[in-house]
Length: 445
Image 1 (cartoon, rainbow, N blue to C red):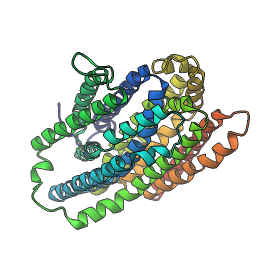
Image 2: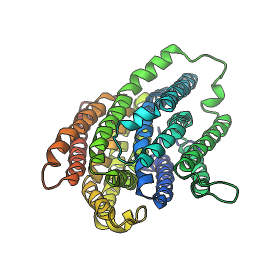
Image 3: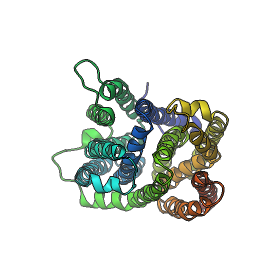
Image 4: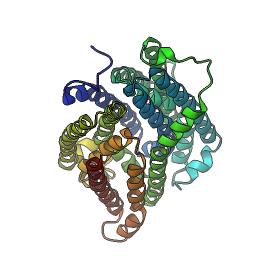
């Protein structure tokens, strides 16, 4: 199997698909990774799910910060490779990895020291839930540096058209997580049952294994990594360029998470069971957005390399091919969540009192899956051009609308479902507006 896909020559759809399929498979593996955690944690009870859901918000926030070196490094490396400057691409890679390690260590330190006030933001009801959330936060976010590095490695390997490396590394991490989760959560032989803490340890251990896998692949790579001198100090101009390019995406993601945290606090007012529903529902919903995100990464690299090489017509063909695939996938996900909500949610939580809430969540959020997939893929296309501001503006503005809209709808007969509808309505608006904006941008190119 060829490791590096030629994105600059040949038929568009086959080359884009060769790059996209491993990325999409990696996204599905990552989704399975998260769902495996949730299935085992759900066996403890909805309180454990609520604890992980609250602490997981800060992991989500961390992903926003991690997207800065990932996006900046991936796009700059893609430009450089498309223009035939591999040494420059290596410089961007070194700077991106340095920033990832720096940000990851800093974020981890803050979470470990301030775990109690951070979890206190959500105003959870049960002391047990609060204690478990603090433990989960200190372990997973305290050692989040491995996750930061993994995201940047994924972006760089995608930039060099070797999405196979990320797939193999993530698959290995999933296997480790599947093995460790039940052992550490429920205990086995001399290993004591550690509950939520066990799930956190299993997650971090799997992330460490993934990092080791990426380092192994990097040692064998001849496109970029062989040209990196780890004793060399990162170039300040490269870091400045990475920050400039990645900052809008990072701010967008962190603002999205911040708004989601405010929404989560509103949800907590309906009880810890509602928090658990939101956590499980969002993981189920990830079947669409994680896959779209994987395809967006492929479109990003495709456009970045062809933009660097001056292949404008090929860029248009690549985007249209990608949208065709994402359109079909979005419809499938919409039908799946709207037609089979009960059996799907029951896989994770079987408590009779919680099930109706979960069904409502999946049906309502199912309406927006196609539009969300369109938004994510189009954001990847914008970023491939180095235009990270348009998707950031659309995301921040319309995600922020969720707060007043939710506050309005919860005072109608919809009650808790009003919060779910605020999310769906904003997702539809984001998908439509960003698509129109990008098509207008293409006409001017």
